[in-house]
Image: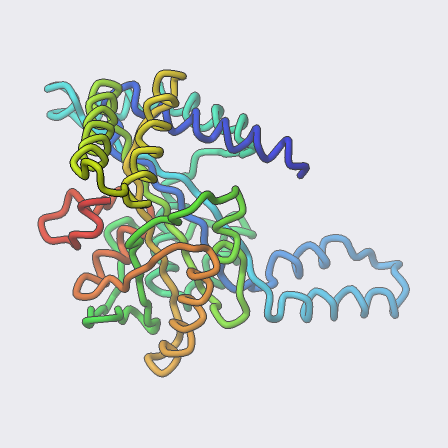
Amino acid sequence: IVQRDKDLYTADWGVYLADLGLPGDIVGAVVVVENIPATGLRLARRAEHELVPTAPPLAASFVEQSAVRMPSGRHRTLARLSITFRATTRERQKDPEEMATELARRLPDLYESLSGAGIDAQPMTAAEITAAVHRSYNPSTENDFEELEISGEEHGVDWDDAGPGRAKTEWGHYRHDGGVSVVWEMAAPPESVFTDTVLKPLLQPHDDLPRKRLTLVYRPYTAGDAAKKVDKQHRDALHAINSRGNKITSAGSEKRHEIAEQARREMVSGAGYERYSALLTITVGSVDEIANAAAVTESLAARSRLRLRRAFAFQDAAFAAGLGVGVLLPDQISTSILVRRS
């Protein structure tokens, strides 16, 4: 993709996020990008389908062996977007069918509008959502789900059973159905100017991190609240500069004022305003693997200039929030102050 197209896609993604604040009933948009080990089942099935009985034995053997060996050590990258709504009328609050009707009316525009950002999106089925959640809690089921999907069969797992069979949250990690996960939350975004590739180190598959999930959480303000928020930040930034009198203004105060000024200009031009945060989850096979995986993860975060903090004492809640199924940490009773302020 040439840089011009990247710029257009980035701009359209910004417009998409800004538009989410217009209806006033969208409380969160969550982007999930995860890397998981490739099973090789799709490639094997494709090779099986492409081979013909008259194929030369040597060529057929080469294709069959390649289908087995190529997925070894490779990853699949999956991405999804979830949008969480608030029922704003008494009818929708009382009757889920009323809310479902409203969502069905708005859904096509929500995923078709993503094409401007270079995204070919389609709505996930209930079965696909259940499978995505269940294999995150129980990684050993990945092959089974993929095999059933390829064959066109239903997996038969109900939403009530999508979570872990057994789980235990520790201070700094989370055990669940044969896997051990560690979740970090964003303590601070990149401080300096960054490009559209800033998150690339965290998004790319890594050989030392078989299962990795980056979750970006956007919580849009309504148009009125956004204007009030931006004006307040601008006043606070001006006050920080003026309160120093004849003293030299700190670089931090000047940067804060510059950001506030830019936000005001962008809002006048039609931009939206939202709070944002990030969660990063890795899943390994045992507690013994955590130290190495955590070191690799924190190194990747440093390359992305993203300040992360391990989600101590709420690893289970942070894990659920990272799945993109409507769990928004700021709406929970007990949560990290870093997330509440983000």
